[in-house]
Amino acid sequence: GGPGGGGWEGAIVTGFGIGTISGGNAVFRDRVFFRAEISRTPNNRKIDQVDFVITDENGDEVYRRTERVYGYCAFGGGEPACNVLEIGRDARWPDTDNRIRNGDYNVEARIFLEGDNDPSASWNTPFTIDNPALDGNVAAPGQQDLVVRIVQTAPNSDADIAYGALVFQVEAYDPGRGSRDGDGIRNVDLRIFDENGSRVYERTENNVAYCAFAGGEPECNIFDFAENGDAWPDGEPIRFGRRYTLRGTANAEDGRSRTVEMRVTLER
Image 1 (cartoon, rainbow, N blue to C red):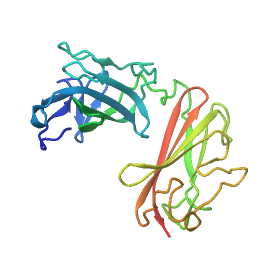
Image 2 (cartoon, one colour; image 1 turned 90 degrees about the vertical axis):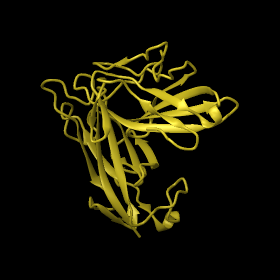
Image 3 (spheres, rainbow, N blue to C red; image 1 turned 180 degrees about the horizontal axis):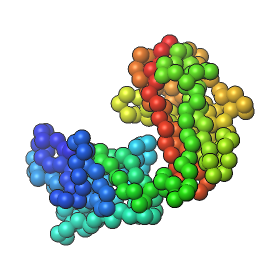
Image 4 (cartoon, helix red, strand yellow; image 1 turned 180 degrees about the vertical axis):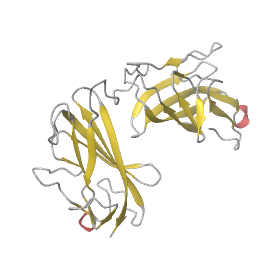
């Protein structure tokens, strides 16, 4: 996507036949590339650089590149053709060595005009990678999937409404290693997002029980809204009556991961 007003004209584009479209979203299986197609800038000012940033479904950055070569390709090239990133088993994001996994992503192009220290424009578009051969989330033949579930939202409750307080506890284990909470699990990433997809809280738990607000020996800590000034730990106000997404990602000792999420309405 990209704006067509304010003196700007352009978009983030990909190549014909590279991916498919599902529900308005680009889906890539075997290869992927993007470029910033910029046909007009305010007052026809010159472009200094384009920074590409790709983030995963948790909002974590997996890839970044600065491009000054015309063509403005996310993976380099552009003289004249963009480099294409091949997707396959054990594929990695260039430069970062981050493993490419199946899932939802967002690519952002931050465009800097000459003389500007901050981006003059920022365009972004969501996309999906779906290749059954590459992802560590897929169990090998004869291997059981990780068990991951949200067992508490509010104190002593797994309901989709939390009154007055939040807990957010995840249970996770690898059936190939055992059936107790934590068997075969390295850690669990616990994240909370608002209705706009902005992350309002996160914590990585290395020990059972996997509790968003610590504790778990044996009881999780309770995050009482009123006692915390009706705000998240970073000071962001809690918006009551709105739905938040609780997302837990269990990372196994063998490198696999599995994510579970639930939408919960918060009330005073």
